[in-house]
Length: 272
Image 1 (spheres, one colour):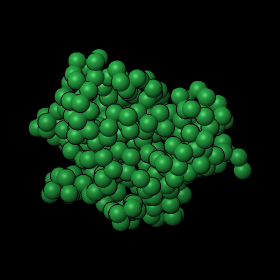
Image 2: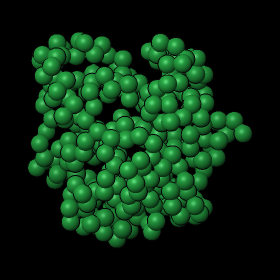
Image 3: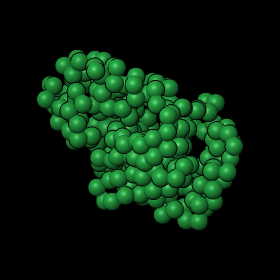
Image 4: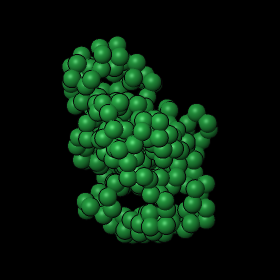
């Protein structure tokens, strides 16, 4: 079975719900229900967002280098190799721009923690309300309200840091790093320090993650590793191979067929 066929087969096992666009800037949500019910074991592919996964069933688990989390789980940027698995999976996934995540979660780079570690008892209250809700629209509204309340109380990132992040995302990770500080109106040392503290990665590492994400989706779309490397800002194909290994522990060929990417066109309407 080729990569395209593998992805179509993986996508076919999920019922996917998405909210009306524009609920909250920098926040994207999708609901997943396994079809047909059974066992799931998927490797999570890193994405340039902080990810929150709320289990609405009875057994979703996220395995990572530091152990295992269940219930409501938060994964920061570039968290290393993660696997999600369980039986009869039903969950809600939220992707937060790190600019938003700083205010509502404060999760550092690479951290994989329970939502309760960040929100305390309110995490259980939100999870309980999500489980009791009858429709996905109700669930999306509950999450939007909880995030909006936290965003109002949280500490926003510096405008200069938000500007630098937008430049990196808008360029697909190919913005000139040395020019970011000048364009933001800060000195290099200050921007690098504040960016790392508030986003969780250095600007260079953030650019690499964003560029990797673009490459991963191009590979999943059928582009050859050679073409992706040549057009994506990589020095050569071996450079792409090293980055794929570093972020996902996979070769470009394995990344192209990763089931985690199979649902993106439906769940996240991927655009760059």
